[in-house]
Length: 397
Image: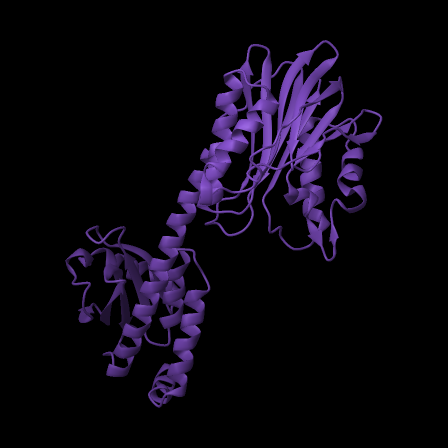
C-alpha cells in the first residue's frame, strides 16, 4: 500500500494532498506536546515504519526523545530500548543523514525553524529511503519544526501572561470581622491575552477595610498596565487615609496622565466598617454596573448612584453613597462579563435579569451566591463567554 502510494505520489496529486493534510494537522494545534505526536502519526506508515521525534530546550541543550511511534505498536518498547543506546547528541542536526540501526534503515531529518535547530526527526524502515521519500521527509520536517516553534512561543507567551494576570489579583484576602465574602474571577479569550477585569479586598487601617471591582477597557499589556496602576493606587491612597471618593478622583487623574497609554476604567470602590447591626459601606460607582443589595426576605434593590467612569474627564467630582448591610444582607458587585452576557439578541441583565438571579440566593453563603451568579451567567448562553468575568459578594454575618 505504501509503495503504491509512493509510486503515485511521484506524479504529483497525492504528494500535494499529503502535504496539504499534514500542514492542516500541524497548524491545528498550539500545544507543544501534541505537535511531535502529530508529526509521527503523519509520516507513519506513509513514509516510514516508525518515527522518533527528538527536541532540545535550547540550541545548546541535549536532545531528548519526546515521541515514538511504530506501525506495529507491539514493537515500540523494543525500539525504544534500541534508541536509548543511540548517541543522538553526537548527531549533526543541521543536515539530513542516513544510518543503520539493527534491521532498520534510518533517516535523520533536522528540525530547524527561524534559523535555529530545535531537534530532529528519525524515520526508520526495512529498506533504503528513495529520493522522493527523503524530499517528502525534509519538507515535512520544515513544516513540523515551524509548528513546534510556534507552539513553544505561544505556550511561553501564555505562561508569561498567566503570571502577569496572577500579579494583578490580590496576593491574599483578609479576615474581616462580621463579613462573609465570596469572589470569582474568570478571564476569557485566548490564553495569551491578559484580561482587563480585576477585584481587590484589603485592610486599609484600624477598623476599616476596602474592596474594589473594576473593568479596564480592552485586554493585553495596555489593559494590564492600567489594572496594575488602579490596584496599587487604590491600596496606597486608602492606607494613606483618603476616603473612597477622594481615591477615585486621584486615580482618575493618574489614568489621564498616562496619555495615549490610558484606558477607560469602570470601578466600584468601597470602604467596609463593621458596626453593631452588621456592616456600614461607603461606596462610589464610577461607570460600573450597579451594586445590588439582597435582603433575607428576597428583596433586591440597587444601592449605588451611577457616576462618571474613570479616564475620560479631567474635571470630575465623586460622591460616596452610604449603604448599610444588616445581619444576613448581601451586596453583589459584578463586571459587565455578567450583566452583558449575550444570548442572541438578549443580555442577561435585560429586564432586571441579574436582580432576579440574586433574588433566588436568599439564605445562601457569600461563596454560594457568587457561584450561583457565575453559573447563571454561564448557563444564559450556550457559547463560551467572550468577556472576562468578576464577581464580588459581601454578606453581613
